[in-house]
Length: 219
Image 1 (cartoon, one colour):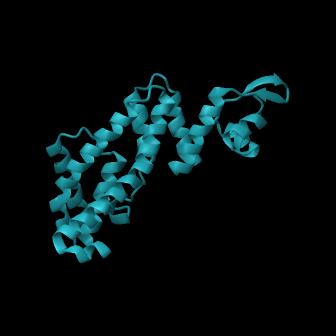
Image 2 (cartoon, rainbow, N blue to C red):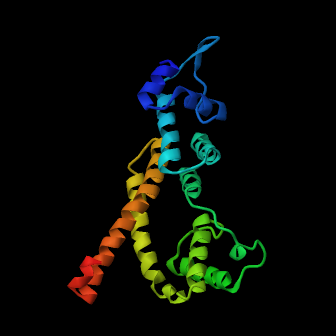
Image 3 (tube, rainbow, N blue to C red):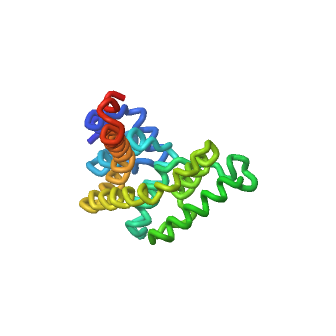
């Protein structure tokens, strides 16, 4: 198909497709003349994946390039490929309380707590994983605003997260193609977070009603 047909099938404007080609996010089409190229199903699928990473995942073009490089590296184990995709979806957090220097007391304590949690649950998670840093930052912030006691329910959160994580991977494992797997990670992570947040709120309302009475249901 010509680039115009590719645009019509995917809803992506031709100038945008050309930009993705220049950035290496799409493989070059097969030249049919000096100024014309032909595109196939592979290009259509890759273009849809790029849009999912951009629109659903909220990734930058540079981050999408990293994810696609992992997808295209056929020698890279699936676990590492999925890890690269998942890592790209986790926001970055500053270290040392945002100062760039030595970590403050709250961050040090939070890091110790996270390390103990990971060890206690037997999670095989690299301490350098961005999700670890995100949890450290969240716990340190809770401590700074006077809610360090939140750590008392951290294991309950970990238990729920473990079950959700397994469900995520069960869903992802149904996919066979590498690009299918990445799409499942992106959609499952981003939209799955939204689903989980909504379910959490519903469960909070129910728990509030049961704990404080029917009037809480109107909150």
